[in-house]
Every structure is written in structure tokens, then in C-alpha cells.
Length: 609
Image (cartoon, rainbow, N blue to C red):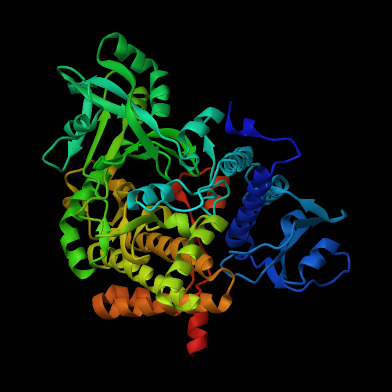
């Protein structure tokens, strides 16, 4: 049974209604950002023209404005009341959504009707057929969100720092605010969803396989091999035996692997033994497939053949190699980063392991190798986490809609009361410290070393000391790229050509990736949550971004960074990743296009002129 089997009757629960409303808002935000605004088909203001507007909409406009979107390809238009204009398409909605098509009266739209309208418009725009798969993904996301909302929500974060960290990883109820299906988990049954979703706050033991040594593919940058590290962390009494190594797997993935004929053959001839579920619980983090266990010095980033948002989350060999190569590079750079930016912290990925059975056809072998792929990621320890720091996932505060906003508000209120500061002053100072911790090391890695991090909200962990940002952890080396002009084949001789090709970005593409993740995905959302519908405070927060860009250039800049930063400060449009269009076109995530996106710093420049 798929998660869409959780679908309720039209007499919807409160959880389903909340999930449906958020899906509708997210879909409309995506469409505005990627299609309607760039095409000039979205406008904000009072109602105009005929007097046939829905009465409920007119009432909502007593405290807001009308967002009016024209869909000329379908001879239709939609209208909804929003709190304020938002050039970044991060609207706060005040009414239901209405649609009028040629010759038809106004109709109330739910998420499914809006999704159908958008998919039909994208089909007309691109000349592609209607994408039923995307509609199914959106429905899946709604049902997953419903199940999450039906579960209890903790009243407060735990007082223990690492318990608070896990709580933050498992609190992303709503997910990416600019993805059409942010919680879609195609491949999970309803029972899988309940067992393996981080938001439902459960844990589970790993499955273990004993695999003949010559069938294990592994690399490590440490004195210990990956296999030895995994064996040391395995449950007591779980032993592979002579000439075998222990290979753990996510329990969902273990079931998937056991269904493969090549695994069945290897088990019959003794190359692999399935040892079953063993040991203490591991806990899924926000990525679903990366697991955390208190006391274990490593996170385990497993392959999981489930489509989460854009991708089936498998670890291909070239991705394993690439992560290790980035780890080698960052091991050499971290001393300089820490000297320049004391709060900079990197979560290393020093080893990987998989299985290579070396028989069967090429596709079947690759499927097994990708299915077992595992990356070790360094956990928080005394060398990384500052004394007294509480590590929290940035996405839990900035990318979690009303729940994240409530937690962030409580955090800032606590500071204001303790330090007797005005609430807006706390917000400005808090954000300023966050920007400094985040932006400086990311820009320096790119401009000074040609290393392209992906600092989106799910890849950043903030270390709070006394509730103030004091450090920022960057993670996920699989997503890190290297500027090709600086990292040619001669500097990447230790990895395969396939891994080299996946690692390398040209300089322009690398900058777009950073500019999107840092300014659009990260800072736009942080400001949206911190300012909570206060346009004046939003301007003050963007002024902090401007200040830190100037300060970075003054203290650490290069000729290249001077030009890039000047263009951002001048208001040149920023790149926004097109998740909706990418999903409609069924493209791999790496093929996603970037649409020009209004730069909020342009308004700051105008004010200062």
C-alpha cells in the first residue's frame, strides 16, 4: 500500500486540512516564483475591473491585498488575498483561492485542482504531455504531511544539547517551502512511513549482512578502514566471522536488497549472510536516510531507493569517491578556515563502504553496489562543538512554516527577556551573527579555493551558545562541487573519470549554486521567518546581509569576489532553482534550471541612493 492509501474522505481531519492548505500555498509560491512572476503574469493590489469578485475574497481584503495571476495559455486567472506583496513569492495567505476560466463562474480551488491547473499550464508552456507522476507526488506529499501532523508535537525542545539537536532534525513537518512535493516519499508504504519517517520521532535497529571480504568495496582517509570502524560500532555479539565483514543497511533498504536475484544467489553460495535486525536504535535525521545514534562517533548515510523530493536517494560509487575526495581537500583547508573564521565547522565524511559481487550483468551489479552504498559522516564531538553549544538544524527554524516560526520566536523572546533588549534589536543582532557564521566560510571556500558548498537549510547546523549563533556546521560532501578551472584532472588523479566529471563545475555554475543556496534558499527563508510579516524589519535584516558582504570583501576579498559581491550589492537578479519545472520535466536534480529572481538588496541600494 502506498502512502496515498492514507487518503481520507472529503470530511477531512484537521491535519488533512492543514496539510492541504500548506500544499496549496507551496504550489502557488512555486508557480509564482518560477513562471508567473518571470512572465509578468502576477500582480498585487486592490481588486479591479468587474464587480463579480467572490464576496469572501472581498472580506479578506479588509486586512490584505489581492494576488492576481493570469494564465493566458488556459484563458484563466486565479486570485487570493495575501498579507503583503512579496517579490520573492513568499506570500502569507489570508483567504481561499479562486479561479475563473473563460465562460465559467468563479470556482474555489483546493490543492488538487490547483495542481491540475498548474500541470496543464506547464504542459501548454513546454509542449510536453500532462505529468500524472507529478500529481501523484503532490498527493503523496499531502498524505505524508497529514500523517505527520496527526502525531504529537513536542511542546519544547529538550534541554540536553544533543537531544535538542535530534529533536530539530526530526521536526521538519512541512519541508521545503519552494518544492511542489516537499514531503513526498514514493516507495514507502503506510507502515514504512510510520516506522522510518524522522518527523514521527521513532528509531529502529539496523540490519546487518556478513559479506566476504573480497566482495566489499571500501575506502578510508583514516588509520582505520571503514569496515573496522563499522565493526567497532556494531552491537555486541554481532560478528561477521573469518573472511567476512559486517555491512549494515537501513532496514527498508535491507528488504529491498533481499528481493534482488543477485543477492539471493550470493546468499545461496555463501558470499553473503543476512544477520537480520540487531542492536540499539538508530534515529532518522531530516534527510530520512542519514541515521544518528547517540554516542556513535559517526552518522551513517545509507542508500535508500525511495524518491524523496527530486531524487531516488542511492549512493553511486562515483558519489562515494567524490565525497571522499572532498573530505581530503577539506582536511587540508580546515586549519585555515578555523583560523580565519573561528566558528566554522565541517562535518567530515572520511570513509565509505559498499558491496561489489562481480558477477551477473552490469546493471544488476551496479544496482547492488549502489544499494549497499554507505558514507560515514563525523558526529559532533569535543573538537567541533563549542563548549555549551546547542546544535540545531537551520531548516527546523527557517524552513518549517508556522512551527519553525513559533520556535524561533520563542528563542528570540527568551533572549530579549534575559538580556532586556527590544525584540527587533534581538532579531537583527541574532541574524547578523548567523550571517557572519554562515556566509564567510562559504564564500571563502569558493573564492579562495574553488570549493562549492551547498548551504541550503537542510545542510546547515547552527551552534547556539547562550541562544546566540556562535558557529555553523557545513555538511553533505556528496553535494559539494569543485571549480573545474582550479580542480582539473591533474589535481583529481585519485578518483575515477566518472567521479571527476560529477565533481567538477565551471565557475559560473558554481557561483549560481552558492548564490541560490545562500541568498535565496537560506537567507530569504530566514528573513521571512524572523520578520514574520514585518516589511520594515525585513529591510533591516537585508541591510545586515549587505553589511556582511561588504565586510567580507574588506577582510577576505579577492579580485573575483569584488566583482561578484558588487553585482549582488547592485541588485543584479539572483538565481532561483526551478524545482516545480524540474519535477514537471522529470529531470534529474543536477539538470534543474535557475530562473532570475528579484534581489532584495536592490531595494536597499535604492534607499541608500
